[in-house]
Image (cartoon, rainbow, N blue to C red; front, side, top):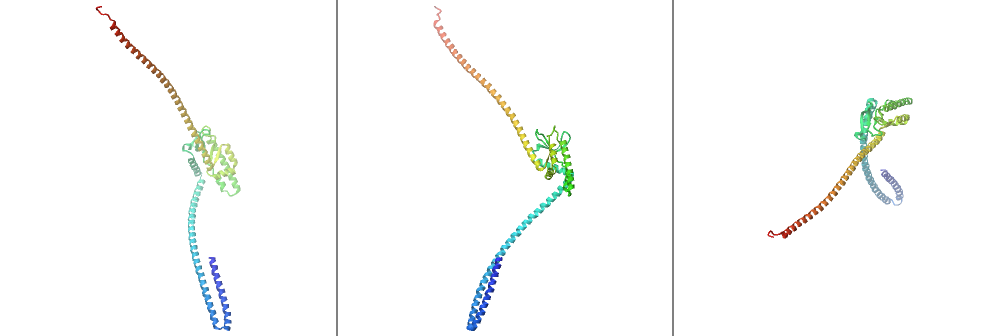
Length: 353
């Protein structure tokens, strides 16, 4: 568009200059012509000027037509680009509306979560539900028990059935959040320090309770897990209260946020799988030993049967020999009887003799 306006401006400037030159020439020539040649030269100059004007007009018209075409093409291109931009804007507005709806839903969920965390009973139920979902997604059904009552009478949120060693591990999800919420909401630095201290004391007390209630060597492993329903809480304790982390390790009560608990459960699943494989391998070994014993018995029976077959074969051969001897002797007996009868007939005396 700028190029077209520049061309149009240049044409007008050329036109003005050309008219100015013509005017000056006409004026000079008019003066000289009047003096020298009179009206004939004036008419000739006028004709030349008219021809030049016609040529210039034609050139200007061509330029103007070209400019109009370019302007029309540019307007069409601009219109298409504008329509495309409007279409893109509509799509982006639709995406923005969808994102706004998602933000509204998220805001409602956050508000609901805030209400849950502000209520002690709801907070405990929320931690239990979160723990149950993580465990159900990670372990086979026969590998855990929820709300299991131990022999000492205490009921644990979840007990994971690990083989000995180490044995079943108890997981508690009733984390104390009252002082933590106050610590987060505090604006004054002194208040933050005070609530952080109270929060640390409540966490230590809960660690002691877990160690006392849920670690029983006659029934459980020598360690337990305290589930924290938020990674931010786990981070705050590790960064701001490292002594509590050390104390929990001494008491063998290990802190675990959702991510750490997933790692623990993956390890537990691998241990259970290996234990099951070892159990199956032991059962297979027992069956193989039984099979080998049966094969040995079968070999012994075959050996005995083979010996019996050998004795039977010998007896059969001896029977055949005896049968041949009997047959031979029978044949001899038959031949002897015939010979005796012939002798008797030949040597017997006559009664008259």
